[in-house]
Amino acid sequence: MNHMHLFLLIVIVGSVFSVISTIFYIVNSYRSVHYRQSMNDNLYGPGDITIIVPVYKENPDFFDKVLSAVQSQGANVIVVGDGCTYPYSDIAARHSFMFLATPQRGGKRKALSLAMHYVQTQFVMFVDSDTILPPNAVKDLLSSFTDDVGGVGANLRIIEDGRVLSYASEFVERSREVILKAMNHNGHVMILDGGAAIYRTEIVKPFILSGEFYDYKVLGRKSVAGDDRQLTSHVIRSGYKAIKNYNVNVSTPSQKTLSSYYRQQVRWARNGWYYFFKDLFGGTAKKAGAFYTFELIYVYLLPIFFLGLSLTEVYFFLFTHHDSYYRFAFSHDFLYFLTTLFTLGFLRFTRFATTLVNGVSLLVFGAAIRNNMARNRLKTFAYGSVGLIIMFIATLHGLVTFWKQGSWLTR
Image (cartoon, rainbow, N blue to C red; front, side, top):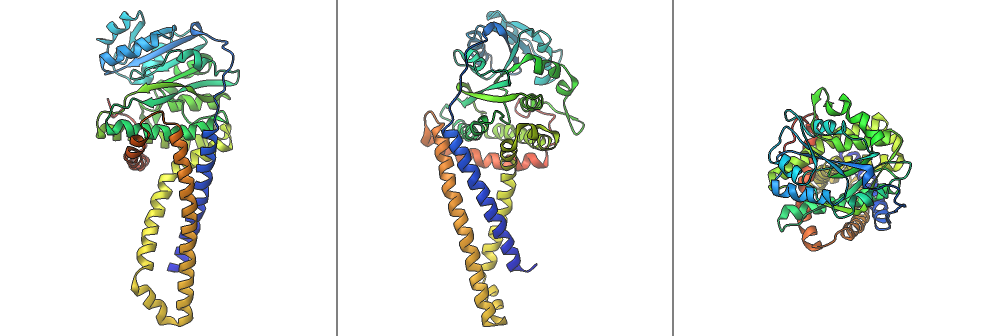
Protein backbone atom coordinates (compact mmCIF):
# COMPACT_ATOMS: atom_id res chain seq x y z
CA MET A 1 0.00 0.00 0.00
CA ASN A 2 1.54 3.34 -1.08
CA HIS A 3 1.16 6.59 0.79
CA MET A 4 -1.74 7.84 -1.33
CA HIS A 5 -3.74 4.68 -0.67
CA LEU A 6 -2.96 4.99 3.01
CA PHE A 7 -4.16 8.59 3.07
CA LEU A 8 -7.32 7.60 1.21
CA LEU A 9 -8.01 4.93 3.83
CA ILE A 10 -7.38 7.44 6.62
CA VAL A 11 -9.82 9.92 5.09
CA ILE A 12 -12.51 7.28 4.53
CA VAL A 13 -12.24 5.94 8.07
CA GLY A 14 -12.06 9.44 9.53
CA SER A 15 -15.03 10.63 7.50
CA VAL A 16 -17.15 7.63 8.46
CA PHE A 17 -16.26 8.17 12.11
CA SER A 18 -17.14 11.87 11.79
CA VAL A 19 -20.54 10.99 10.33
CA ILE A 20 -21.21 8.48 13.11
CA SER A 21 -20.08 11.05 15.69
CA THR A 22 -22.40 13.65 14.18
CA ILE A 23 -25.33 11.24 14.44
CA PHE A 24 -24.36 10.42 18.03
CA TYR A 25 -24.11 14.05 19.14
CA ILE A 26 -27.28 15.22 17.38
CA VAL A 27 -29.47 12.29 18.45
CA ASN A 28 -28.29 12.40 22.07
CA SER A 29 -28.63 16.18 22.24
CA TYR A 30 -32.15 16.14 20.79
CA ARG A 31 -33.31 13.35 23.08
CA SER A 32 -31.74 14.97 26.12
CA VAL A 33 -33.15 18.46 25.55
CA HIS A 34 -36.63 17.09 24.80
CA TYR A 35 -36.58 14.62 27.69
CA ARG A 36 -39.56 14.86 30.03
CA GLN A 37 -39.62 12.86 33.22
CA SER A 38 -42.69 10.64 33.46
CA MET A 39 -44.30 10.33 36.88
CA ASN A 40 -46.83 7.69 37.91
CA ASP A 41 -49.34 7.52 40.72
CA ASN A 42 -47.60 6.76 43.99
CA LEU A 43 -48.50 3.13 44.61
CA TYR A 44 -45.67 2.71 47.11
CA GLY A 45 -44.50 4.55 50.20
CA PRO A 46 -41.63 4.61 52.72
CA GLY A 47 -42.97 1.48 54.39
CA ASP A 48 -42.29 -0.50 51.21
CA ILE A 49 -38.56 0.14 51.18
CA THR A 50 -35.40 -0.50 53.19
CA ILE A 51 -32.42 1.83 52.73
CA ILE A 52 -28.94 0.35 53.10
CA VAL A 53 -25.98 2.68 53.72
CA PRO A 54 -22.53 1.02 53.63
CA VAL A 55 -19.70 3.01 55.19
CA TYR A 56 -15.91 2.90 55.34
CA LYS A 57 -13.49 5.72 56.21
CA GLU A 58 -16.11 8.43 55.73
CA ASN A 59 -15.81 11.83 57.40
CA PRO A 60 -17.99 11.46 60.54
CA ASP A 61 -19.52 14.95 60.32
CA PHE A 62 -20.42 14.53 56.66
CA PHE A 63 -21.74 11.03 57.32
CA ASP A 64 -24.04 12.45 60.00
CA LYS A 65 -25.47 14.83 57.36
CA VAL A 66 -25.96 11.89 55.01
CA LEU A 67 -27.90 9.95 57.65
CA SER A 68 -29.99 13.01 58.54
CA ALA A 69 -31.07 13.25 54.90
CA VAL A 70 -31.79 9.51 54.85
CA GLN A 71 -33.81 9.76 58.06
CA SER A 72 -36.05 12.44 56.53
CA GLN A 73 -37.25 9.88 53.96
CA GLY A 74 -39.19 7.99 56.66
CA ALA A 75 -38.03 4.52 55.59
CA ASN A 76 -36.41 1.63 57.43
CA VAL A 77 -32.60 2.08 57.40
CA ILE A 78 -29.67 -0.28 57.87
CA VAL A 79 -26.12 1.09 58.22
CA VAL A 80 -23.29 -1.36 57.50
CA GLY A 81 -19.70 -0.82 58.55
CA ASP A 82 -17.24 -2.40 56.14
CA GLY A 83 -14.98 -3.89 58.80
CA CYS A 84 -15.42 -0.81 60.98
CA THR A 85 -17.68 0.27 63.83
CA TYR A 86 -16.70 3.44 65.70
CA PRO A 87 -17.74 6.21 65.20
CA TYR A 88 -20.32 5.08 62.64
CA SER A 89 -22.22 2.84 65.05
CA ASP A 90 -22.70 5.82 67.39
CA ILE A 91 -23.88 8.05 64.54
CA ALA A 92 -26.33 5.38 63.38
CA ALA A 93 -27.61 4.99 66.96
CA ARG A 94 -28.30 8.74 67.18
CA HIS A 95 -30.65 8.32 64.24
CA SER A 96 -32.16 5.09 65.65
CA PHE A 97 -30.88 3.04 62.71
CA MET A 98 -29.89 -0.62 62.77
CA PHE A 99 -26.10 -1.00 62.59
CA LEU A 100 -24.25 -4.03 61.26
CA ALA A 101 -20.56 -4.59 60.62
CA THR A 102 -18.61 -7.16 58.65
CA PRO A 103 -15.87 -8.92 60.69
CA GLN A 104 -13.17 -7.46 58.46
CA ARG A 105 -13.01 -5.17 55.48
CA GLY A 106 -14.35 -7.07 52.50
CA GLY A 107 -15.52 -4.26 50.26
CA LYS A 108 -18.90 -2.73 49.51
CA ARG A 109 -20.25 -5.97 48.03
CA LYS A 110 -19.75 -7.89 51.28
CA ALA A 111 -21.39 -5.08 53.25
CA LEU A 112 -24.44 -5.00 50.97
CA SER A 113 -24.70 -8.77 51.06
CA LEU A 114 -24.70 -8.81 54.87
CA ALA A 115 -27.46 -6.19 55.08
CA MET A 116 -29.63 -7.90 52.45
CA HIS A 117 -30.28 -10.77 54.88
CA TYR A 118 -32.38 -8.32 56.90
CA VAL A 119 -34.39 -6.84 54.01
CA GLN A 120 -38.03 -7.96 53.92
CA THR A 121 -39.57 -5.03 52.06
CA GLN A 122 -40.66 -4.95 48.41
CA PHE A 123 -37.91 -2.50 47.48
CA VAL A 124 -34.35 -1.89 48.60
CA MET A 125 -32.33 1.30 48.17
CA PHE A 126 -28.56 1.64 48.28
CA VAL A 127 -27.13 5.01 49.31
CA ASP A 128 -23.40 5.74 49.41
CA SER A 129 -21.93 7.16 52.60
CA ASP A 130 -20.97 10.40 50.80
CA THR A 131 -24.29 11.01 49.04
CA ILE A 132 -26.94 13.41 50.35
CA LEU A 133 -30.56 12.77 49.40
CA PRO A 134 -32.97 15.66 48.78
CA PRO A 135 -36.36 15.75 50.55
CA ASN A 136 -38.87 13.20 49.19
CA ALA A 137 -36.19 11.41 47.17
CA VAL A 138 -37.57 7.97 48.03
CA LYS A 139 -41.14 8.98 47.25
CA ASP A 140 -40.17 10.47 43.88
CA LEU A 141 -37.98 7.53 42.87
CA LEU A 142 -40.72 5.06 43.77
CA SER A 143 -43.13 6.98 41.53
CA SER A 144 -41.04 5.85 38.53
CA PHE A 145 -41.76 2.19 39.15
CA THR A 146 -44.16 0.38 36.86
CA ASP A 147 -44.56 -3.37 36.47
CA ASP A 148 -41.75 -3.55 33.90
CA VAL A 149 -39.22 -1.39 35.82
CA GLY A 150 -36.70 -3.22 37.98
CA GLY A 151 -34.42 -0.38 39.05
CA VAL A 152 -34.52 3.42 39.28
CA GLY A 153 -31.51 5.63 39.91
CA ALA A 154 -31.18 9.26 40.96
CA ASN A 155 -29.31 11.98 39.09
CA LEU A 156 -25.87 12.65 40.55
CA ARG A 157 -24.68 16.23 41.06
CA ILE A 158 -21.28 17.31 42.34
CA ILE A 159 -21.10 19.77 45.22
CA GLU A 160 -19.33 22.81 43.73
CA ASP A 161 -17.05 24.13 46.46
CA GLY A 162 -14.84 26.48 44.44
CA ARG A 163 -12.14 23.92 43.63
CA VAL A 164 -11.23 23.19 40.01
CA LEU A 165 -11.89 19.47 40.50
CA SER A 166 -15.44 20.09 41.67
CA TYR A 167 -16.26 21.98 38.46
CA ALA A 168 -14.41 19.46 36.29
CA SER A 169 -16.28 16.58 37.93
CA GLU A 170 -19.61 18.35 37.51
CA PHE A 171 -18.90 18.89 33.80
CA VAL A 172 -18.23 15.17 33.31
CA GLU A 173 -21.45 14.29 35.15
CA ARG A 174 -23.52 16.69 33.05
CA SER A 175 -21.98 15.21 29.88
CA ARG A 176 -22.99 11.74 31.07
CA GLU A 177 -26.46 13.09 31.82
CA VAL A 178 -26.98 13.97 28.15
CA ILE A 179 -26.18 10.41 27.10
CA LEU A 180 -28.12 8.68 29.87
CA LYS A 181 -31.18 10.89 29.35
CA ALA A 182 -31.16 9.85 25.70
CA MET A 183 -30.92 6.19 26.71
CA ASN A 184 -33.72 6.65 29.25
CA HIS A 185 -36.16 7.05 26.35
CA ASN A 186 -35.67 3.36 25.57
CA GLY A 187 -35.93 2.23 29.18
CA HIS A 188 -32.33 1.11 29.66
CA VAL A 189 -29.33 3.08 30.89
CA MET A 190 -25.83 1.66 31.17
CA ILE A 191 -25.57 2.27 34.90
CA LEU A 192 -27.70 3.20 37.88
CA ASP A 193 -25.14 5.10 39.94
CA GLY A 194 -24.35 3.45 43.25
CA GLY A 195 -24.78 6.78 45.03
CA ALA A 196 -28.56 6.36 45.17
CA ALA A 197 -30.68 3.72 43.44
CA ILE A 198 -33.76 1.65 44.24
CA TYR A 199 -34.31 -1.94 43.11
CA ARG A 200 -37.06 -4.52 43.37
CA THR A 201 -35.96 -6.79 46.19
CA GLU A 202 -37.19 -9.94 44.46
CA ILE A 203 -34.82 -9.27 41.54
CA VAL A 204 -31.62 -8.33 43.36
CA LYS A 205 -31.77 -10.08 46.74
CA PRO A 206 -31.00 -13.63 45.51
CA PHE A 207 -28.27 -12.21 43.28
CA ILE A 208 -26.63 -10.10 46.01
CA LEU A 209 -26.64 -13.07 48.38
CA SER A 210 -24.90 -15.23 45.78
CA GLY A 211 -21.15 -15.65 45.37
CA GLU A 212 -21.44 -14.22 41.87
CA PHE A 213 -21.97 -10.84 43.52
CA TYR A 214 -20.20 -10.78 46.90
CA ASP A 215 -17.24 -12.86 45.69
CA TYR A 216 -17.07 -11.14 42.32
CA LYS A 217 -13.96 -11.86 40.24
CA VAL A 218 -12.54 -10.55 36.98
CA LEU A 219 -10.39 -13.06 35.11
CA GLY A 220 -9.96 -15.01 38.34
CA ARG A 221 -8.97 -11.94 40.37
CA LYS A 222 -11.13 -10.59 43.19
CA SER A 223 -12.80 -7.28 42.33
CA VAL A 224 -14.20 -4.74 44.78
CA ALA A 225 -15.50 -2.23 42.21
CA GLY A 226 -18.40 -2.07 39.80
CA ASP A 227 -21.25 -3.26 42.02
CA ASP A 228 -23.63 -0.66 40.53
CA ARG A 229 -22.79 -1.62 36.95
CA GLN A 230 -23.21 -5.31 37.79
CA LEU A 231 -26.62 -4.74 39.41
CA THR A 232 -27.81 -2.63 36.48
CA SER A 233 -26.74 -5.32 34.03
CA HIS A 234 -28.48 -7.97 36.15
CA VAL A 235 -31.76 -6.02 36.11
CA ILE A 236 -31.66 -5.71 32.32
CA ARG A 237 -30.77 -9.37 31.79
CA SER A 238 -33.68 -10.29 34.08
CA GLY A 239 -36.05 -8.67 31.58
CA TYR A 240 -36.74 -5.42 33.46
CA LYS A 241 -36.06 -1.78 32.64
CA ALA A 242 -33.30 0.14 34.40
CA ILE A 243 -34.04 3.88 34.28
CA LYS A 244 -33.17 7.14 36.01
CA ASN A 245 -35.40 9.79 37.53
CA TYR A 246 -33.91 13.18 36.70
CA ASN A 247 -36.25 15.01 39.06
CA VAL A 248 -34.27 13.54 41.95
CA ASN A 249 -30.86 15.18 42.27
CA VAL A 250 -28.54 13.76 44.92
CA SER A 251 -25.34 15.54 45.91
CA THR A 252 -21.84 14.23 46.49
CA PRO A 253 -18.42 15.92 46.85
CA SER A 254 -15.67 15.49 44.28
CA GLN A 255 -12.32 13.89 45.07
CA LYS A 256 -10.01 16.11 47.12
CA THR A 257 -6.83 15.77 45.07
CA LEU A 258 -5.91 15.39 41.41
CA SER A 259 -4.27 12.02 42.07
CA SER A 260 -7.32 10.60 43.86
CA TYR A 261 -9.58 11.90 41.07
CA TYR A 262 -7.39 10.18 38.49
CA ARG A 263 -7.42 6.93 40.47
CA GLN A 264 -11.21 7.13 40.70
CA GLN A 265 -11.45 7.55 36.92
CA VAL A 266 -9.09 4.60 36.38
CA ARG A 267 -11.22 2.44 38.69
CA TRP A 268 -14.36 3.36 36.79
CA ALA A 269 -12.63 2.84 33.44
CA ARG A 270 -11.36 -0.63 34.36
CA ASN A 271 -14.80 -1.71 35.44
CA GLY A 272 -16.38 -0.02 32.44
CA TRP A 273 -14.17 -1.82 29.93
CA TYR A 274 -14.88 -5.17 31.54
CA TYR A 275 -18.61 -4.58 31.32
CA PHE A 276 -18.29 -3.21 27.80
CA PHE A 277 -17.18 -6.64 26.63
CA LYS A 278 -19.49 -8.49 29.02
CA ASP A 279 -22.56 -6.50 27.96
CA LEU A 280 -21.77 -7.00 24.28
CA PHE A 281 -21.13 -10.73 24.45
CA GLY A 282 -23.07 -11.69 27.58
CA GLY A 283 -26.55 -10.78 26.37
CA THR A 284 -27.18 -7.49 28.18
CA ALA A 285 -26.78 -5.28 25.10
CA LYS A 286 -28.99 -7.58 23.01
CA LYS A 287 -31.65 -7.54 25.72
CA ALA A 288 -31.50 -3.74 26.02
CA GLY A 289 -31.87 -3.14 22.28
CA ALA A 290 -30.15 -1.50 19.30
CA PHE A 291 -29.90 2.03 20.70
CA TYR A 292 -28.28 0.80 23.92
CA THR A 293 -25.78 -1.20 21.85
CA PHE A 294 -24.98 1.80 19.64
CA GLU A 295 -24.39 4.05 22.65
CA LEU A 296 -22.29 1.42 24.40
CA ILE A 297 -20.01 0.84 21.40
CA TYR A 298 -19.56 4.51 20.54
CA VAL A 299 -18.87 5.72 24.09
CA TYR A 300 -16.17 3.13 24.72
CA LEU A 301 -14.52 3.16 21.30
CA LEU A 302 -14.45 6.96 21.02
CA PRO A 303 -11.11 7.40 22.89
CA ILE A 304 -9.44 4.71 20.77
CA PHE A 305 -10.68 6.14 17.48
CA PHE A 306 -9.79 9.65 18.58
CA LEU A 307 -6.24 8.64 19.48
CA GLY A 308 -5.74 6.62 16.30
CA LEU A 309 -7.12 9.30 13.99
CA SER A 310 -5.14 12.04 15.75
CA LEU A 311 -1.88 10.15 15.21
CA THR A 312 -2.66 9.44 11.55
CA GLU A 313 -3.69 13.06 11.00
CA VAL A 314 -0.31 14.21 12.34
CA TYR A 315 1.45 11.77 10.02
CA PHE A 316 -0.72 12.88 7.10
CA PHE A 317 0.06 16.54 7.75
CA LEU A 318 3.81 16.10 8.22
CA PHE A 319 4.27 13.90 5.16
CA THR A 320 2.16 15.87 2.69
CA HIS A 321 3.73 19.16 3.77
CA HIS A 322 7.26 17.92 3.24
CA ASP A 323 8.99 19.33 0.12
CA SER A 324 10.61 15.99 -0.70
CA TYR A 325 7.18 14.47 -1.37
CA TYR A 326 6.40 17.02 -4.07
CA ARG A 327 9.88 16.74 -5.58
CA PHE A 328 9.35 12.97 -5.75
CA ALA A 329 5.95 13.41 -7.41
CA PHE A 330 7.27 15.97 -9.91
CA SER A 331 10.26 13.80 -10.82
CA HIS A 332 7.96 11.12 -12.28
CA ASP A 333 6.04 13.29 -14.73
CA PHE A 334 3.98 16.44 -14.73
CA LEU A 335 0.64 14.58 -15.01
CA TYR A 336 1.49 12.47 -11.97
CA PHE A 337 2.37 15.66 -10.11
CA LEU A 338 -0.99 17.28 -10.98
CA THR A 339 -2.86 14.11 -10.02
CA THR A 340 -1.08 14.10 -6.68
CA LEU A 341 -1.97 17.74 -6.02
CA PHE A 342 -5.62 17.17 -6.97
CA THR A 343 -5.95 14.01 -4.89
CA LEU A 344 -4.39 15.58 -1.83
CA GLY A 345 -6.59 18.64 -2.23
CA PHE A 346 -9.70 16.49 -2.50
CA LEU A 347 -8.74 14.46 0.55
CA ARG A 348 -8.05 17.58 2.57
CA PHE A 349 -11.37 19.13 1.54
CA THR A 350 -13.24 15.95 2.46
CA ARG A 351 -11.63 15.83 5.87
CA PHE A 352 -12.27 19.55 6.37
CA ALA A 353 -15.94 19.22 5.43
CA THR A 354 -16.63 16.22 7.66
CA THR A 355 -14.65 17.78 10.51
CA LEU A 356 -16.64 21.01 10.15
CA VAL A 357 -19.97 19.17 10.30
CA ASN A 358 -18.72 17.17 13.27
CA GLY A 359 -17.63 20.40 14.97
CA VAL A 360 -21.09 21.91 14.56
CA SER A 361 -22.67 18.81 16.08
CA LEU A 362 -20.23 19.10 19.00
CA LEU A 363 -21.48 22.64 19.60
CA VAL A 364 -25.03 21.28 19.69
CA PHE A 365 -23.91 18.64 22.18
CA GLY A 366 -22.26 21.38 24.25
CA ALA A 367 -25.54 23.28 24.30
CA ALA A 368 -27.28 20.14 25.59
CA ILE A 369 -24.67 19.88 28.36
CA ARG A 370 -25.23 23.53 29.23
CA ASN A 371 -28.96 22.84 29.45
CA ASN A 372 -28.26 20.36 32.26
CA MET A 373 -26.23 22.82 34.33
CA ALA A 374 -28.01 24.51 37.20
CA ARG A 375 -25.39 27.18 37.98
CA ASN A 376 -21.78 28.32 37.45
CA ARG A 377 -22.00 27.37 33.79
CA LEU A 378 -18.98 29.38 32.67
CA LYS A 379 -16.67 27.95 35.33
CA THR A 380 -17.98 24.43 34.77
CA PHE A 381 -17.30 24.65 31.04
CA ALA A 382 -13.92 26.33 31.55
CA TYR A 383 -12.65 23.67 33.93
CA GLY A 384 -14.49 20.85 32.18
CA SER A 385 -11.56 20.37 29.82
CA VAL A 386 -9.46 19.28 32.81
CA GLY A 387 -11.97 16.55 33.61
CA LEU A 388 -12.18 15.41 29.97
CA ILE A 389 -8.40 15.18 29.57
CA ILE A 390 -8.06 13.17 32.78
CA MET A 391 -10.95 10.93 31.77
CA PHE A 392 -9.43 10.35 28.31
CA ILE A 393 -6.06 9.29 29.75
CA ALA A 394 -7.73 7.21 32.49
CA THR A 395 -9.92 5.43 29.92
CA LEU A 396 -6.88 4.27 27.96
CA HIS A 397 -5.09 3.38 31.20
CA GLY A 398 -8.12 1.40 32.31
CA LEU A 399 -8.26 -0.50 29.02
CA VAL A 400 -4.72 -1.87 29.28
CA THR A 401 -5.12 -2.72 33.00
CA PHE A 402 -8.82 -3.63 33.17
CA TRP A 403 -8.17 -6.87 35.07
CA LYS A 404 -6.66 -5.00 38.04
CA GLN A 405 -9.82 -4.42 40.08
CA GLY A 406 -8.74 -5.67 43.49
CA SER A 407 -8.36 -2.22 45.06
CA TRP A 408 -10.77 0.69 45.55
CA LEU A 409 -7.80 3.06 44.90
CA THR A 410 -9.40 6.08 46.62
CA ARG A 411 -9.98 4.79 50.16
